[in-house]
Length: 228
Image (cartoon, rainbow, N blue to C red; front, side, top):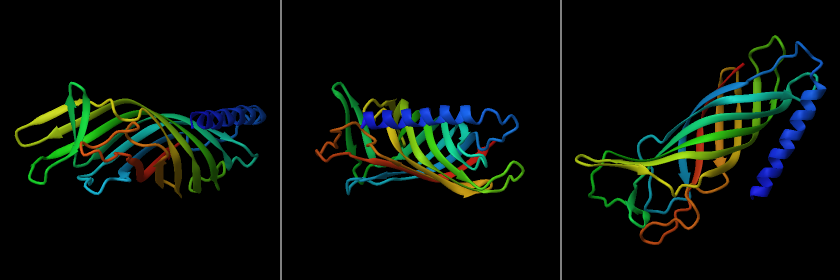
């Protein structure tokens, strides 16, 4: 899978360099949507029956995308970006730090707690194919941007808050290298953002204390805003 991702990135980069050279003569050509900021609701799919999501599992992302048109009308092209994202996942899965590592278990029904989450911080690289019906003077237009998003987790933390107890520690069992498919579609200011991960949230062979696999798949739904 890593070779596939490496090939995709190389293909995007080669196309970008070729397109940039061929269009460099257009000194006054416009570019679109080079900065982005987004807010998401985060889902975990493929959960065991005993696992539920709670509260509002939210996410935030922001970054810069190099917009590279591939035609003279400049309404079709690619985007290669770099950004930052933070995602919180509230569940009834308790992460317990022990001398042998981290174990996971589902809270007992009679255990009272206020919040329980795993939070991840990522450096991300969007790779997009971009279509829009914009012009140099038209600022309200439809857009469809789709492609891949690569990410690397630079920090992951588990946090539990109960009435008389707090526990927080860095979680090293989450999968650091992330990759998935992305779709951003909308008109003018508001755009729908969809992301589906192609690998699991936790490292391979992560299980609950019952032995049940924790092969959770992250998915995000939200809105994204673009700025020139």
